[in-house]
Amino acid sequence: MKKLIVTAALTGAVTVPTQTAHLPYTIEQLADDAERCAKAGAAIIHIHARNQENGAPSSDMEVFGAIMTAIKARTDAVICATTGGAVTMTPAERVRVVPTWQPELASCNMGSMNFSVHPIARRFKPEDYRFGWEPQWLEGSEDFIFPNTFKSIKHFIGEMKKVGTRPEFEVYDVGHLYNLDFMLKEGVVETPIWIQFVMGVLGGIRATMYDLMHMLDTANRLFGPDQFHWSVIGAGYPNQFHMGTAAIMLGGHARVGLEDNIFVRRGELGRNHDMVEKIVRIAGEFEREIATPAEVRAFLNLKGQDQVTF
Ligand code: KMH
Ligand code: ZN
Image 1 (cartoon, rainbow, N blue to C red):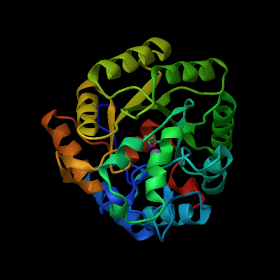
Image 2: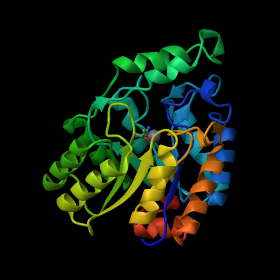
Image 3: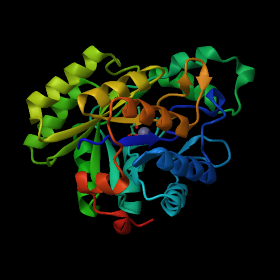
C-alpha cells in the first residue's frame, strides 16, 4: 500500500478528561470526532467505550454498540474495536465486543506488561480533577500489569476468527513480535499480518527512531517484508508526530489521536481532527497520498461494513 493509512484513536482508556477538555467520551462527541477525523483523512477509527456521565472507561456492551452505530451512521471509516479495554477489565470482559458486535477489525495485544501513566498525576493537584475516579486511575497504574497471556491471546484470535473480525496486533516491545511469530508458527495467526507498533508507553519500548528501526528489522526478519503491514503509535508529544513522520518516510502507516497524545503542538491541546489534519499535512509534504476506507478494506481484506452486528 503506497498510500498512507491514518488511524484516529479517539479516546482510549488512559487519557483522563482533566487532561484535556477535547477528550470525547459521550456517544455524540465520539461520533462528531469520528466524522471530522474521517473527513480529514482517517480511514480507521479506533474505539473504546466510556461511561456517559463521568468519562470513566467502560465495558458496557450497550454503550460500545451505540458508539459504533453512531459512528457508522456518520462515516464509512473502518471501525477498529479495542480488546485492550482498560485496567479495571478482565480479559473476558475485554473480548466480549468481538462476539457481540463482530467488528471488521479489533485490536489484539501481544504480551503482558507493565502499563503505567502514573507520572501524569504529578501534573495535577487534587482539586484540579473533574471526576472523582481520575486520580486513583492515574496513580493506581503504577501497580498495574496488563495481562495478555498466550492462552488469552489464542482465545481472542479464536473469537475473532469465528465472526470474521481481522486482528490488529498491538506490539509494545520486541518480545511481542516473537510472541506473534510463535502464534504464526502454531497456526493461530494467518498472514498477511497487520501490526501496530506501540512506542513510548511506560512499560514498553521507547518511541525513538532506533527503537522503531529495531522493531521493523525484527519484524522483517521474522515474517518477511511481504507478510506484514505496519502502522505506528508514538505515545505522548512529540512522539505521535515523530513516529508518524517516520512511518510516512519508511512506507508504514500512522495512528494519531487523543488516546495516545493530547498536544497538537508544544503546549497546545489539540482535538482529534487537528491531529489527523497535521499528519495528513506532513504526508503531503512527503507526497504520500491518503488511503480511503474502501482501499483499506481491500488492502486488509476486511469483511465489510455490512457484516458487523451494530
Ligand atoms: N492504548 C494504546 C497504547 C488497545 O486498545 O487494545 C494501545 C491500544 C490497545 O490501543
Ligand atoms: Zn486502544
